[in-house]
Amino acid sequence: MKTESKGLGDTLAKITKATGIDKVAKFVLGEDCGCDERKEKLNKLFPYAKPKCLTEEEFNTLDTYFEKNTDTLTSEEQLSFIAINNRVLEQNLVPSSCASCLRDLVSKVRVIYNEYKEENLSGEENAVD
Image (tube, rainbow, N blue to C red; front, side):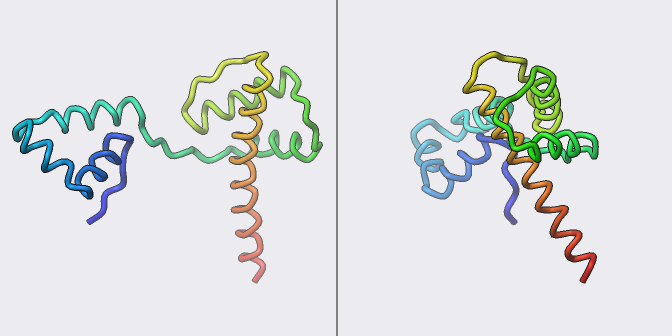
């Protein structure tokens, strides 16, 4: 049975098991080589969080922005994008004047928006059939 990785620790544990490194570590370091503690610590530091769904209001906010097809982001839009990003991806971004940070924010939110839009479009097509 394959279990889904909760974070980086689980992924590394799967890799070390598949390559046989885990057996070498246990041979060299003993049965209690610290692998389980390390795995849990890495899972806590680098978790794989599943994005939450957009609310209808969030989707409409993004739809309005991306339909404008503009490269500018007002301070109000930045705050909206940060709030959406932080809720959906469970992050703690803060407002910034860094151009590359804002570009990255818009790119991340665009991916979420496009994914959601594609799902809704394919759902509507299937409902019509």
